[in-house]
Image (cartoon, rainbow over the protein chains, first blue to last red):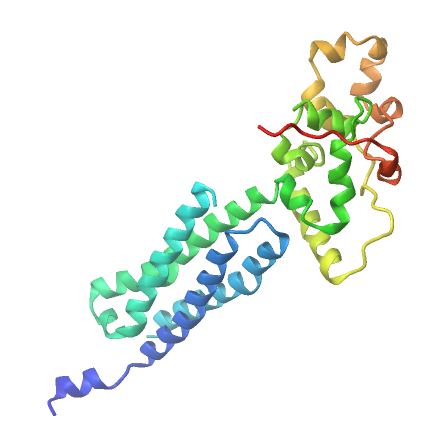
Length: 69
Length: 204
């Protein structure tokens, strides 16, 4: 195995954090998009919590990941 | 779904797709282009999508449909259909003196600098009480209804200033010394709704 192959195979710490951020942001955005179809107050609540919270947490995790990389 | 909501949904779908690409192949971020892609996918698009979606939600929260979607507000919605010109909200609603799709918001927003913001904060409180708290048996305004909210539209109108009933009253009405609803007493009056005939809006 060459050095190049070894470095490609070993995941970097930032990769794990990016995936974690992705698991927060993507479902959060999906929830936010789903709430746009309804004019009910509960849709607004779902948009804020958990949608907004998940997206915000994911963005913070992403920023932390790139800052600590 | 409105055009704005569709555009925001498209933006969000794009963000999710880009996030998926970076999550599946995080090695892309080793290159400069990958870093830009990750920044777009994980920061810029979600922030933009969230801000535009919030704007769409806030705009929708002004709608009559939104206000009347809570069970407790149903009688107030019904009072807009009372078949009497003396009923203030009904006369405004039926004669299109206010936009029918934003009937509640038009009169119940303070026309002051932070009126809209204050109304939205109160709206959040209403949601909390409706779903997690106990609603009062009788719903009352937080503070007396100010003439300012009426005069926002009526001030300067010929029908208002030349009305016989307003003779000698304009100054007092403008300075809130006399309240509009001292004379225009039939407001929502939901306690007596059952006794009222309702207007049937003709179907287009």
